[in-house]
Image (tube, rainbow over the protein chains, first blue to last red):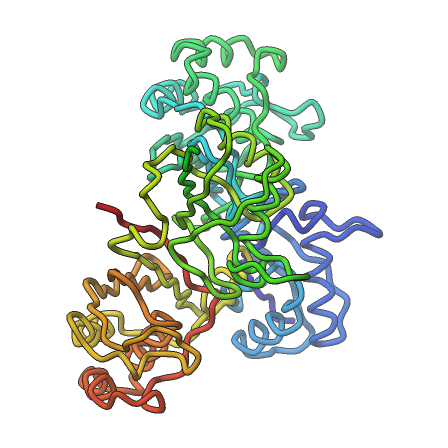
Length: 246
Length: 246
């Protein structure tokens, strides 16, 4: 029974999150429906990350098994044809070892958070970026972000509904740079807590706006208290950009 | 009577072109309606470029007169508030000399054409980019594009409905570069013929795909024959990015 691995791009604004829910449009539902339309099988996808409502992906990874060994290019083209009315596209399809699992084999996840930092609101990227009018100091945000890198108890940056067993995680990369009118925050870790990226981004935005000092980020991390977190950034600007495997 | 100059960003996919038409959603209609909602005046915008249906802008420029001298920041914020349900945003507003005219004072227009050159179709940029699956040779496209730079009779690259008096124009810049998975074509000129950018892009795409030789572009330009043009590129990938004034 061959196993396939897909790389997906999607506009999270069109779905009630990744995970399938009865009666709601979801990314998982759209892809599973396309697979059934292609080959008649009813399957359940495994995914590297279960993105929230409104969160986008340019590099989500999913795996599933088919009864018949189709060429990977056939699977990709057929699924894209069945997804043409959806805001999901298959960017890549390969056949993988039956031991390979999109979620459990992953050794790293990467996220990008985009802030549009200009006076005028977005027309082209409405729903795909967080608009902040006041000028931000991205260098101060980057300095502050370095306090988050490494092994920490991230309770401050964890949603109350997070189901992870432990709040202790290792953040490998936290980088803040300006790209024209945008401020880009890039985070990489083996895994993240629920809403951790949006919680860290919202906190760093306070520093960028001069409301908090650079040193405040280390202080709120050390507090290990959800109430110490800055306002959580909206889903609009968040993208799952890639998943690493050995 | 103060004159104002706005810089506009818009998603052309939401409108039947820039120019106002009874009973159709247009960019001009949306902005004129917002101005009336703000101050009660009925005005007619002058615009640097009348973009076609589906063509986007990140730097369209328009001018108009108001009876009362409002601060420019007030005009910008009020129009953005009235445009919040539209796919148009005001990026900048300044008061200008009453002699200044968005169209007649312009000394240059700049366009970007975006091609997504990868196997997988776009999910996030659907309607905002031209998808070409087969690998393109952007270096060959750039070399071919240089034949278009300078003073030429652009009849080959002119739509049959073009109302310009003369097909002779000077193209200042034609540049083709790869930006990750995208191929970007940048064109700059004092003015362009109707559909000239999309006609040149479609022709250069033939070179990028290896169907035409680099030298074919100079040949079809010299033919001064609309029938010699390559297939016109779709509106999706085209952006009016800026207008120059002395």
